[in-house]
Image (tube, rainbow, N blue to C red; front, side, top):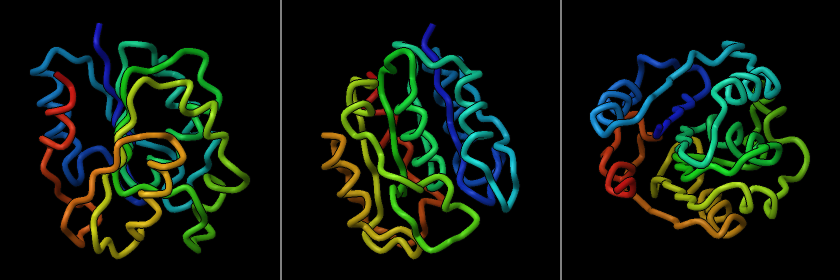
Length: 172
């Protein structure tokens, strides 16, 4: 069974942005999809988010999609994953402290890029040119560190809305 897990941004939820639309499109493509409400509100804790991701039991038939804070959460999961996942989509993501104390626990300490690369077959890093929260260079750095494909999109809305074909065209 093909599975997909969408991890939302900090201060967001499953019913915001493009998450439900993507959920529906993935279901039409034959995926079992989850878009969980991530815990912690304005003070999220990495360990709580990792527990939710682990409970989904990602495997070789799973795609992981993370938006904003969902990106370092997925990267941290991949550091401890017991099974490889098929594909990872990292949208408006970062792997360093952006100066927000409330989310710092997700990016404290170095990432183990070799383990992350080993635990997924394909990685796509999608960032906007003028994102007001996440500089484009941070996405480029994640792509370089993971060997993933970097996709640069014109825009400045932190992917509040997005062309879902950026994901879905890469699932066939």
